[in-house]
Each structure stands twice: as structure tokens, then as C-alpha cells.
Length: 90
Length: 90
Image (cartoon, rainbow over all chains, first blue to last red):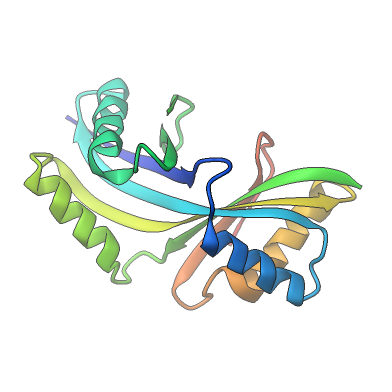
């Protein structure tokens, strides 16, 4: 078994309301940053796990995303091994 | 002015308590994923902005992070242009 650090980026789907993003957009504008079109806020989750190889690590992490880490109705996610170029997008 | 999409990853500093990460770790373990050592949860923020060039875009976004997006005491951040390889880490 090998050690992998997985990076999971969970983002609100385009078009869906994102109140936290709106609040940050407003705050940045009031601080003088006016050249901003949009702000979206999601989660960055880092999981250290043991797996046979990086393909298994990616598959396991993708299963975790489908099961509990991302809401399939409102969120998209990307999984990658940190320091690796393989990436599963859904 | 050009259009840039910035990706900001804000993570709790190593060693600091991360109750949300702990809760996810516990939930994954109770679902049968036992080969996990650690889970850390941060934010992924996406900002669409106008800037002269990518260097200015990175500097502007780094200033936003230092001002309001990240807590300098408890969090680290990484800024990058999406689809670009330049990255400022702090």
C-alpha cells in the first residue's frame, strides 16, 4: 500500500445561487476592487489515504465524493493526486 | 484589460484543529473507508476579474487574500490563474 494525498475541489454548479460568493464579491467591491465579475465559493478537501496505486486512490476518492463529499444536484467536483497530473472531473 | 479566472485555495494550517475535517473523517470511516490518515477542509474560491496581465491578476488576488479571504493566523493560501501554471504560495 502506498500513501497518497488527494485534493478534492467541490464547486457550486454554474447558474446556481452562491450566497457566500455574493457576500465576498460585495465585500471586495466595498474595499475598492471593482474589476470583479463573479465570485464562487466551494470547498477544498484534502484526504491522506493508503491505496495500491494512484488509479485506485482516484477511484476511491471519486466514490467518496459521490457518496458524501459533494451534492450531485448542486455541486461539481474535481479529484486529483497532489503533485500528480491525473484528474477525474465530474 | 484582460479577463482572468483566479483559483484561491485556503487551507487550515498544519497542526491546527479542523473540526469539519474530523467530522468528514469520522463519516468516511463509518462508511467503511478505514485507510484514511487525515482529512483537512478548506475553501476553494474562484474570482473572475479584469487585469492588465496575469502577473497583475496574481498580485491583486494575493492582496485580496491577505486582506479578507484568508485568516493569516490560522490559514495558508495558494493563488493561481485557472489554466495557467504561475502560482503564488503563502
